[in-house]
Amino acid sequence: MAVEHKRSRRLKKRITNAVLAILLIWSLFPVYWMCVTSLKSNRDIYTEPGLLPVAPVLTHYRATLFDSHFLTFLRNSFLVAVATTAASIVVGSLAAYAITRLHFVGRRWVARSIIFVYLVPPALLFIPLFAVVHMLGLADTIYSLMLTYLTFTVPFCTWLLIGYFKTIPTEIAEAALVDGCGPAGTLWRIIVPLALPAMAVVALFSYTLSWNEFLYAMVFIGSDSQKTLTVGLVGLIMGDVFMWGQLMASSVLASLPPVLIYAVSQKWVISGLAVGGVKG
Amino acid sequence: MGAGDEGKSRARLAAPVASRHRHLFGKDAPLAYLFLSPILLVLAGLVAYPFFSAIFLSLQDKMVGAPGAFVGFQNYVTLMRDAIFRKTVVNTFIYTIVGVTLKAVLGMTIALVINEEIRARNLMRALCFLPWAFPTLIVSLNWKWIYEGTQAGLLNMVLYNSGLVSTYVRFLSDVNLALFSVITAMVWQGTPFYAMMFLAGMQAIPRELYEAAEVDGASVFQRFFKITLPSLTNIIIITMLLSTIWTANNIEFVYILTGGGPNYATHIFPTLSYEIAIASRRLGLGATVPLMFLPILVVIIIVLTRRMLEQE
Image (cartoon, rainbow over all chains, first blue to last red; front, side, top):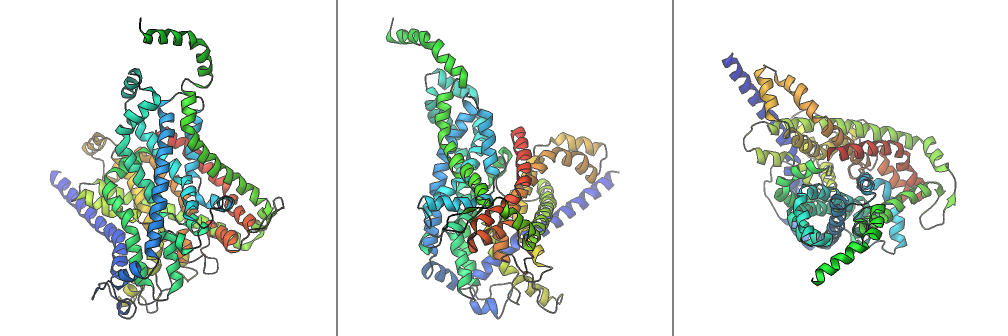
């Protein structure tokens, strides 16, 4: 019985490891292929293709950084992501504090409508928002993105912050209120410092969402000077037939910020997910 | 008797009047509404207003830059009679249902494996979830390159060199393959989200349940179907519903990989809507496309909202 048990355990371990190996290849090989392609010369990419970078070159990275609009796109992506994230954290914190700590009529209704809005997909809103952006005179500028990205970053940040604010014991906030802090003072002096790590994580998520957005950027932006990285890269496809080397180099560079953010924050990702659904 | 006491007594005198207002909207109402005003502005101005104007647009025949003419439900009728739209509906359902199912099965597999006592668990977890960290647009570009229909494409290179095929496979331009090629790319990126959610749920299941089951001689499968799966029901439902909305509404994979082709075999409603509204400049008809799916979306959102609030 015991021997049999041991054997079945060993078998289970072996199956687990085999499945894990397959899953790792599945998850990592496309990433590997992107990196390898970015390091190959055009000749190696198209006429002598192989799985390894036989003679790695940095030509594509040089072309990306110095002979394309890449740095302009990068700056735009950065500005848009920072602006929307900052605005969302402020708006989201105020709302989350009101919903978790204040007593007022319509609290449940507001919480419900925030989730509701979080679930309304951009595919439903991009056409009327296109009209709004035109009406406001923001068409073809990064400001149109700073404004419209709030449609998903604000509900998303608020929803996560509500979860985090709830974990701060009410006694602490009540003690501060008794000591004469007032609700605004309590938010600023007690809740914000305690929630700071959580707010940092939420900010990173929001930055990533904004950095990765494509649909609004494609619809609202036409000029190269205003394009973010995602739409900017699509422009490359149209350009050259032999563009895959440069396209993959640009892709590697454009993926670095979200991937680094992921590497730094992945410890918190799961607890963040436990609080509420994140992104797909 | 200090100034403080005087202030207190004055407050006591004023209390009955103030509290009547307080009871009407709750005791923190003024501050609460002040704090909520920015978010309400965003919700009303950037989501509610555009949403209703989309419905308004769908009742008009409107081109970009021209005034619209009210046409009632003409756009809805036009779409329902349109063969391309009907093809799009079928594609959207196949794309979403097959995609969500595959992601759930694969995500469960990843979560189960990571939840075992494996070596370098945190690193393995990070690596298995890596696809999630990449921008969807870049994932789409990468898979377009992987699917390249010449010897330079990764899949064709491997298949051809190993003798499995004698002519290069046209993953993205073969009518029978294109939709499944797009789904594969989408599953690659979407699976980690499922695995993360499932894993988070699994870690909340008490160890004792498994230990007791093991003592009782329950097999691996019995433990999975009797303990793991029932404990995860709510998380599985939330994850799949969230993912259904995101999958059906995602434009990047189809737009980049096939552009809806070949012969409309991969058009889904976001790409069709984009093509009609932006490329052909017919805003009214374009806005109608996603609205055709509104009843399904509303049902999913209501169920999800209820479950997400319960989960809290």
